[in-house]
Image (cartoon, rainbow, N blue to C red; front, top):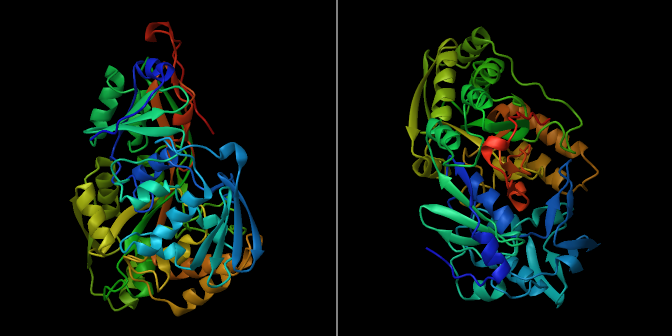
Length: 495
């Protein structure tokens, strides 16, 4: 499917250059930011759309399209920044009316996973083309940090436009075409960037080496990353990661609803061995969803030690007949299956018989969203705000309203979250209490923050890995005007 693009002669000339080709493990599923939840879609949408708010290095909210002030406990005023008062990709200017239409549309959406986030909005009043007020039902000091949905044009919302497959935003890249390959075009110079799904990691590596792809990022086992570091025409950069990998649990399961069983599973996994042997550099153990550098994390939480004997004792204390049989669902991605197989062997020592079921990505993710699992493995990508604890574990956040897919019901946690939600960003003790309670109850089994890396042809410049794995450097990535044979071989390690 394609959307017609009006281009100047300058942009047309630029776009005639060779596209920069990005090979990815999983293609985006939905390019409407009101619906997207998978990592690839979120990363592309950051480039296609702009939001009112973004985040700094400590994950504190900062202006992107607009500045804001809290007029009263239930009223926020947003004013568009003049230099960002720009046009959508279909030519119409972005105004406060588009902001209002974007957020008002959630009230009519029955199946958006983000609708619950904005159910506290009582009304939206446009003051003029550059400013508007959000009126809330109850006070929410965290409200501004929630306004990270990409802004859509009001005229296309009214027309029922299919943003999921033909996105129209105001970001630095715009939609160009989408058949088997998604093609984006950079607004500044017309450079085309293609994203092709290549599920097999070995095939992705071979395509990069043969020059059939220019760049790939993440989703490779460490031995393939090391292999790429030996290749003459490839350079590799790495960084610490912040994306949180975990085991999801069905808390309605007769065994898994017992905290002793969850503790046993946590002690049955040797995270350090997996990080050392199977994950890329920059990976580190995790004890909470938000990483240690997050502004709310003033206390450190220690991951559960690998102790199969203790795990077995906890299972016996819980009255479980050994071995405890559990079914673990994951995708068919080779690295994810490998991780599952290692955990299967580790858990066996603790009296847990883990059956692995690997499904194609679409089927697997649908099973997770529907709550059809005992255990599953996923990664939260790009999480910035502590409200993730409410969305992932709040008793009122069961699907499709929220992301409490394991159906964790805990009135004490609900009370702690409610208290924390009423605190300002500077008052972190309430969120620390939430984190501590989750750490004790283990509605998820924390695993690790995956390190980040990027491998690219030597002629690719101005691209580096980010801790959350985003693709923001597509705004500046370029191809050097020199031949591979003229480039000195370098291997970069970004920290």
